[in-house]
Image 1 (tube, rainbow, N blue to C red):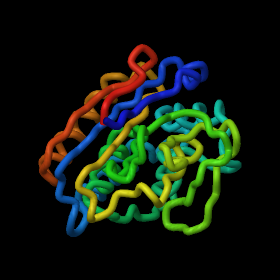
Image 2: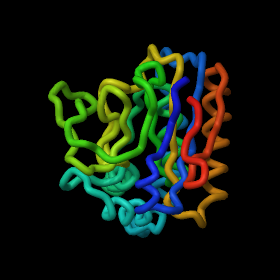
Image 3: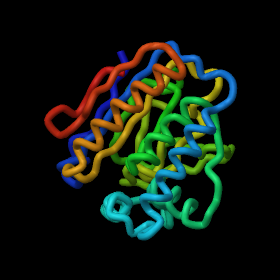
Length: 230
């Protein structure tokens, strides 16, 4: 059985870190995305951040967290990148159903969220530190760009799944219209937002099941419970 786990050394930097892990089996991710839900969430996101932009406190939480880790130069958390896009008036484009759904919940709640095709994860999914030789081909590219030694990454037995923790995902494990089993994960940095976090997890779980069918489960990982089955 595959597992999702957080290496103990990660908690030396982020002792209050919690990761919500959602697994879905037997979903129907075919056809077009959920553009209407994505646009609605993008508008809600913009209304929440329009006065402060990337200085919004929820975005600042992730910006400050990224300063604490070794990462690729110039990269930023995905939620900060989306805020910059919104403030410039750029559109948020549909990708496929499950990606649109998790992006919608991420935007509405201003909480980072990522996703992978569960069947493409080799062995365990791990949040930990890179050796520096892990294969990593960024989403939409074909050239290997391995992480730096000591960089915080999501990884499996075949290499890096996400570089610089909250930054960029690998092409190898991406969610596609052929995905039937999905792994989604949401990061809580500020423990005072635990209620928002749980609401977002439950909202995403319900939305995926309603829209795409199948079955799903939720686990929350933290220092005293650092792993779960996926």
